[in-house]
Image 1 (cartoon, rainbow, N blue to C red):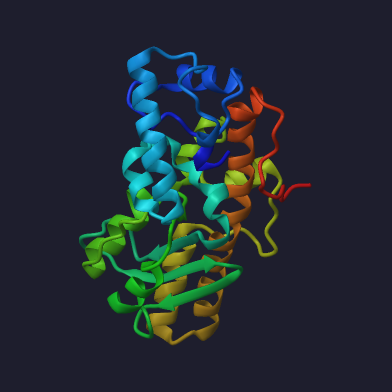
Image 2: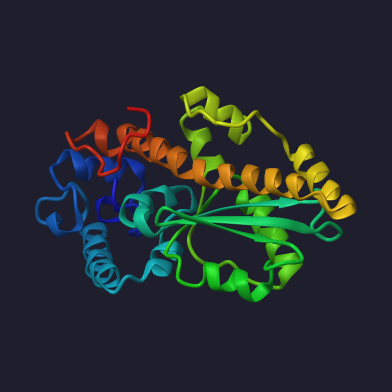
Length: 261
């Protein structure tokens, strides 16, 4: 599923009307023809107006426009368009309260490269802004409720790129639980023994109190694994959501690799 397969941002079009458009053979914006669309005249005019602006905005790479127009639960549709430039991120902290606890490490994966920022070394507001600056799409697991509020409270920054939070997308395809539990459910393996958020807190204090560099190395590796595995999970989620929507109507495969194949 790509952005240009989507008609739900148009006024008066919900999931059922969008599906009727696909079933009539109108799979993309460029194929939209109000004369043959199974819509009323006014709705057809609204869709035609949306399509005209959306095509122009997509040509301009204006992802934030689509972030404003699409329902929040449909951000997964951006993924195929922007997979190669998407910014996957994950944080570790000293606790759960963003007003009292600190962020210890933040890992980012983009374009196959992973960067980790560490508290007391290079984890600064300026470094975070630089990482987020040009990202067309940010991807996390539970980042809307946890990671982003922590970063915004600790560093007085704003993460305003469209945000694909895989926790909510997973629930749509009956994948529930934490990130590592879901990875096991779908067959994504990890090389190192399983650690937890509590272990991450312990490792940080072990490093901070005792100067234990091995503890920091383990924490950083754990954080990086979480971030790098997000892309495999996003690939699986996007393929399954495609199969349940456009793929159920049209014989089209998403342009996303299957990490489990």
